[in-house]
Each structure stands twice: as structure tokens, then as C-alpha cells.
Image 1 (cartoon, rainbow, N blue to C red):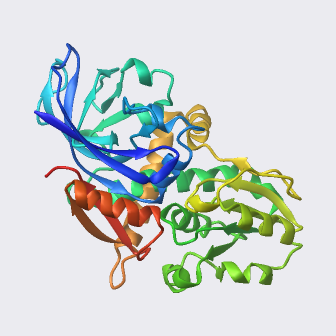
Image 2: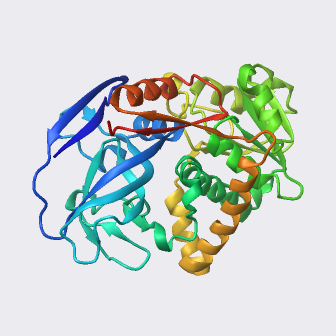
Length: 363
């Protein structure tokens, strides 16, 4: 047996390579999972762009200097097992390498899932190391796997951003401005924020995606990037930056003199990334979703947090798929060449924001 993997040059994300290597024998306690299919979104581009800073390259080391494996969310099936509690054929949801197979070392196994106990992942955040058994996962619906892979990890981040801002009483602001408003994490955040009384949700997007953002119905106002200065400068506002564009961040900070908080989330504009610099107003603060998970686990307990997330997810996933115009239409890409091509498309920010890409490296 062999494993095919898509590698990305860490300092030149458009440079990719496909490697096929012979599988080594499993050790006691390990399992080999076939990665059936995974989502490719701007979230994965953020993982790559911030791979060094936030340790995303460390989850699945490539073994080749300068090359990395981008983590992806999706579904896999246990193909071989040397673990007594994980049977062959078990279906799992979690964080995979962009590859045909992954070897995991399950520990802390329960009826709901397990963590990967591989030594190189010991110091990485537990949220990304956990794998769920679909037969006991309250989020899981077998007919809805694509939507879950595409939106579930993004929506959890969206929900946590909204929860964090509400927990901070929106820093006294009545307007929340979201960049890259057509991105899935942004409109998931807008969907939650729109439920908050007294909060005005404004989306910033490219002119080509303006109509799409308007059609979603979760933004009170949508502006093209060129129209930013139409916003009133003085009322207290919060900026949630999904784009990561230095030039845009500087325009926002200089124009919005009432800016109360600047929250950095994503990096979809990889050609224009950079630091905070000497900006007026509040210093941009990176949002790290696992930190809010940890806080809410302490506040509500793991079950209390999970119950809230499942309820919110069900509302969101229903809205996303509602006829006559669903927010998301899924396209499938099979094989290494097709996966490389769609990766380049997502990296370049091309295509319709209404399309969700599901890929598989399996031939």
C-alpha cells in the first residue's frame, strides 16, 4: 500500500508537489485512516499563511525541508487498526493531512472519539488533535457530510467570535465591520451577530462579491472595499479582519476614529499580509478560537458548550441550504491533479463564493 500527499512550499504557497510513498507497518496502538474527502476553503489558506506562527505545519510534518502539508477538515474511514478499541471500518470526522491516508495513535479513547497521541502533536492544541466517531457525534448527519466538512470548523470559529464579542459587550460598540464578507467564516459570524439586538453588521467585500453578500440577508449593509470611507467615522465600532490585508487594515484604522477593538482572524489576502505597524487606534489582536473554547468550557462545562454549538449549527446549516437560493453549492474534485488545480483556485481567491470545494486525493 502507498500514501499520496500534496505538499506546499512553505515560503511560496503556489508551489506544490505530489509525493507517493510506500506505507510502513503500523506499530501497536496505531491506526491507518483513509482520508475519504476534505474541504478546501480560504481557512486552509490561513493555515498555510500562518503555518509557522501558529504551528499548523507541525501537525503533519512532511519530512522535507521547506515543504509543508496543509491540514484540512473532513471525513475518513479506518482501513487498518492495531488499536483494540478502534475497529476497521469506523467512520471519523477530524483534522487530516492533505493526503490519501493518515496514521494516528489514538489515546484517551471514549465512546465519542479520541485524541491523536503521536509525540510530535503532544504540544499542539487539543481542539485540532481530537477525532470524532460519527456514530455518536450530535453534529453528524450522513446525508450532510459535505456541508459539515466545509462549514462546521469555520462556523465554530464564527460562533466563538460572536460569543467573544458579546462576552466583552462589543467593547461598547454598536457596529461590527467584517472584511472578506463573502468568506464562509465571515458570513457565519454575520449570521450570529445579526441576532444581537442593537448591533449593526456591515460587510466589506470586493465589488464582484457584493451581490452575493447582499443576497445572504445577514448583513445590515454591504460595502465594496472602495466604499469604506462612506461609513461614519466616529460611532464606536469593532473591526473583525478576515482578509489580513495590511493596506485595508490601515484604511480602516485611519478612517474609523471611533474604532474600539480590532480583531484579526484570517488571512485570505495572502498577497498583502503583514504586521500591525504603527496604526492609530487599538492594536489589532489575533483571535485564537481555542482560547474562547477553554473559557467557555470553564464557564459552562464541555457539555453546555457543545449543546449551544449543536443548536446554533443546526440553525445555520438549515439556512445555508434553504431553497430557492442556497448559500452554498458543493463541487467535488477527485484525484491529485484535480486537487492541485482547485487548491490553486482557492489560493488565488478565484471562483464564486457560492461554491464549496470538496476534494480527495484518492484516485
